Length: 345
Image 1: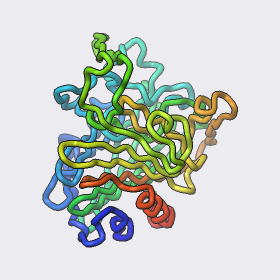
Image 2: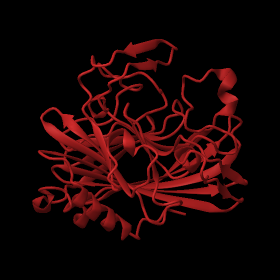
Image 3: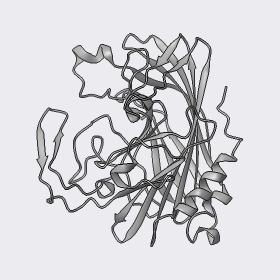
Image 4: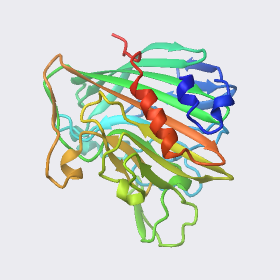
């Protein structure tokens, strides 16, 4: 981990800060502190259709994820109520949509949506690196289990950097097919400032069906941009492959970078980037059909008892400059060497 942190500008001289992981079983929440600052919280209440890390903060406390719907902030778009912090799910598993489920789905339509229910916190630990592992079931609305999920997070940071390593193993309880679809797999909804400026009118629909139109040129807050390891920028990042992608922009006086790194042993590496200018930032290796305009497809099939494992690293940096391509290439190479992140059995 220290090698990774050294990839950050000015970070080589900064020591790793201690990580403290605290549980609140009654609230179904686990807080992660780096140094003496709250970094993020793992939320798994029955009121959410999936577990999430929410919100995510840069080292200076700046929140880099959107507030809506759990804690809306002025100017937050109110579209896509299922976009909460950082999450992991998929649009089509045996025909069930796990991605788009939220409180906004009418009860009569819930039968078409899956639910990810966290039933066990397996371990938490504090120290130079903090850890959290949990078990969850991917179910239909009748609580029939399609997949068992085991996920482990590792958290670390310095005075200016934050790192999340995530490894998720999905084990089939019955035969399952992840039918190639656009919406998946690791998703993050960005703060308003990290959206890309738009030269078109934008229409958003809130959870009550109320439509809001933002006229082109009237929203002066967004200043974000994307860059991939393949050199694709802005809207051109969408549907392309790369072993990393970053979004970057000014938040206050600082330059903030949020990057997702893929792992060489992940299915269908390097991933496709489902990176949208309005603030959805996702890595989806299983959306090949739409991302290639039908030229090829990736339908992941797991027989009962088989499993698939996905590993990702999320980097958050704030300072005078955004992380360079060279620094992110070094960070990706370091992550590719990591072999110790096994899920708990």
